[in-house]
Length: 282
Image 1 (cartoon, rainbow, N blue to C red):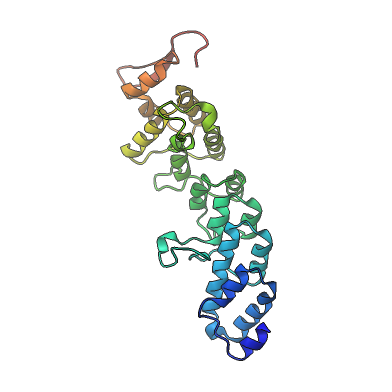
Image 2: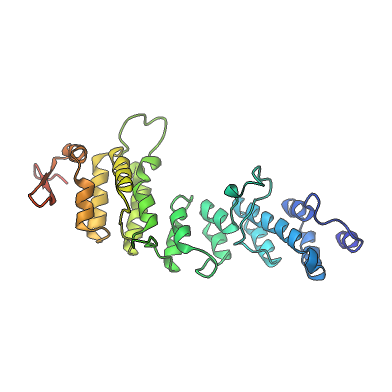
């Protein structure tokens, strides 16, 4: 029946009929879609855009079966545009790719189906955005396939920058009110930090504003979080001594750590060193 209408000049553009069929999971529309594109290359762009929308939709829905079916039909997961039922169809700032949708959901199985790589994707940008996905596996997979964590002009890691400023958001919640965020509440960000520095990520703040943002994030956490962050960066040589000294230099930071019995002092050459006040302190 679908072929009969197509052969007799059915309109494949108005009201996006292929997109509607795919959204309703009508499998019998797939072969006619492929055949129509081959028979009418001059009209193929619009049906292709409809199928691209459907792939983004199924990636967001984590529907592996229909993701595979759309890939079989020749849909490109790297094209950018709106998704089906998107209320911001005409606003490019809201447009995504199917790769982006799978990365955000953290669905590694679907993400792998799209075969991300340096030829088709900016792996460094995907790595930074994967920090906020709902799963941890996508981050590790990107590092495994060669995503460069140090993709900033100064040789530092944009992903690490975002990780270090994310503590205050991970522990955010109305029940917390003004209490400092405990270490257990930011364990996922700490695990991400360890994964990044293990793969060679380096923290190189590009300006004073970013340094202040990292401090602000740490101030909202319990002091042990700051100690753990500095330990991770120092042990993995992921930040220079000068950078760590600058992080710990302000009086407010010294006050922040004083509850742990840690006193930071400055020698004449402005080298900041930790000094414990009692045995057993961090």
